[in-house]
Each structure stands twice: as structure tokens, then as C-alpha cells.
Length: 366
Image (cartoon, rainbow, N blue to C red; front, side):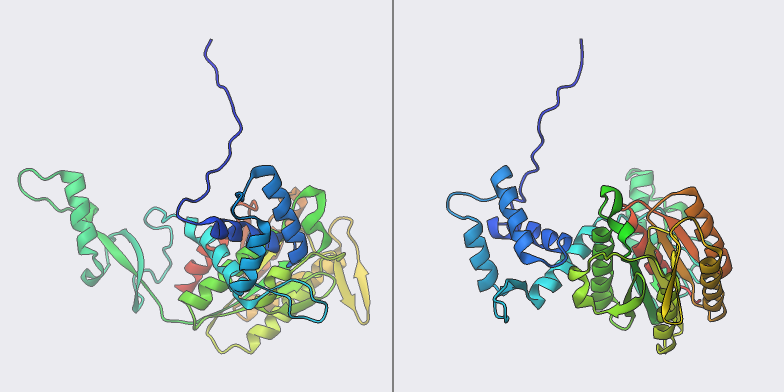
């Protein structure tokens, strides 16, 4: 009788990295998950080492901690004498997030990134796509087109190059884009045993690193919203944690619009990562809250802001990391009023969707 026999799978360590580099990669992941709590991250790392043998007799976790300090990733120079990560660690966390999320994106089939301005830009990009009627001859990627012809028609006989073999280089606009990323930090982001805040933080850090390195003229502002909304710096992302909050989407949108009004860029957009419906509204000095279903009072105020964003030509793209039917109805109505976009994503696909949407929006005028 045929069958399958399953054994324990232990991932191999990256042979191109030494023990310190392998441990550093795990440590930075743990720091992100613990909200910047180094002591807790090191405790988790020690437990993982005991379970899976991450170190060897010649190099232990104690040696790793000393190397972290010597190499500038950790410091004890604070009033309490506690371990704190440094700016170098914060930057490395962003780079790791960028590599983890953006590095795994695959170039899709031709036409995936087309817009109404496709091929009309003034700066050569890196993406390739099949030739379409109306493309300029200067856009043809000669080497790629010749390679396609040889693959499709072979080397024998007369050389044959058809329209189907042609590839062109996508052009990008040199326009600047201002983006506000809103992250829900209400209590539901860690309910039901699912950590939703860590993937959201990773996506935010990866997006920040991408913009700073590849699109330095673009701007990215990051807002977190619970009962209230406030802006945080990019360097504060690893320390972000969920609180005992409701979801005040109105406060987040109001702050996002205030920030975008100060930006002089012609292209402006809002990305919102959330796992639930609006449940909170600030009326004067008191909070109006209702977590049971969709409250019409809260909903109406949220839709008013969606309409204001549309009037100002600021699209809101909602990334809903939940799939409850009544939540979909709220997102559907919100998106219709704003004329924006909505995605219902698993945590695993969140980074891919945000990056693709960001790149696509850079090549069109709102």
C-alpha cells in the first residue's frame, strides 16, 4: 500500500550567513513582535535556542548579546540601564521587512500594472510588458525582444521576429506622491489568538524603507488610530503596540486629511489597514462608543469624511484583514462614497497588495 510518511521538518540555516547574522535576523523579528521589548525578545530567543539549537558550543546567546552591543545594535546607556535597540537596529528592521515583503513580489503577467497613462511617462522604469499598439519604438526592450524571438521560433532558418515577441519598458512619471498610512491599533487587532498588528507594522516599515530609498521625493506619514488618532515617526514603528481601544476611523481620517492639506504634491492618497468597523466617535469631550453591529451615527460621520476625501480628490484604499459579511457591506459602502479601492486580504497577502497598489498609483494622476 502506497502512502506518505511525514517527519519533522527543520529549516536549514542560510549557509551564506554566519551564526551572528542568522541570530540577528531572528532577533529583529522578535523585537518587532514584542513591540521593541528587548528583554522579552532575548528571553524568547534563548527559549528558541534551547528548543532548536540555534547556537553552538563555541558561540552562545551571551556572545550574541555582546556582539549586538559591540556592533551598535543594542545600548544600555539610559537612566534605567535597560537594553534598548539603537537607530541602527531600527533601520535594519525596516530593511529586513522590505526584503521579506517586497523581495518576494513576482513580476506579474503583462498588463497587470496598466493605467490610463501607461507608457506615457517621462522616466524609464524597470518593469517589462508585452508590446501594445500605440507604444513608442523607443520603449522597445531590444535584448528581451530578441531573446523572446529565439525562444519562440528557434535558431534554425531565417530569423523571425513578430509582434508577439516584442517587450517594452514601462515608463514612470516623475510626479511626487504623498501617502498617509493609517494603522488600526484597536484591541481587536490581537483578539482570537491572531496577531494582526505585527504584519501591519512590517508592511508599514517595508513601505517606509521603499519610499526613502527608491522614491525619496515622495512623502509618507503614518497614523495610528484607536479611541483617538495620532501621528508617529517611522522610527517608532517597531515599538507600536495594540491598546484597549475602540476604532475611531473618523479621527484617523480627519488627521490624515489635515496632514495631506499641508503637502504640495499633486497626488495624494490614504491607505487604511483595519480589521473591523468604526465603533467610536468623539463628540465634544466625550467618546460615543458602540461595538455591537454598525452604529448609524458613527457610520454617517465616517461616510461624510469619505465624501470629503473624494471632493478633495484623495482616494482611500482600505485593506480589510477580516472577512465578516457585515464588515464587507461597510467597506463596500465606504468605498462607493469615496470612489476609492478596497481589498479583503489575509495577513499573508497584505504586503503584496499594498506594494502593488502603491506602485500602480504612482503612475497615474488622481
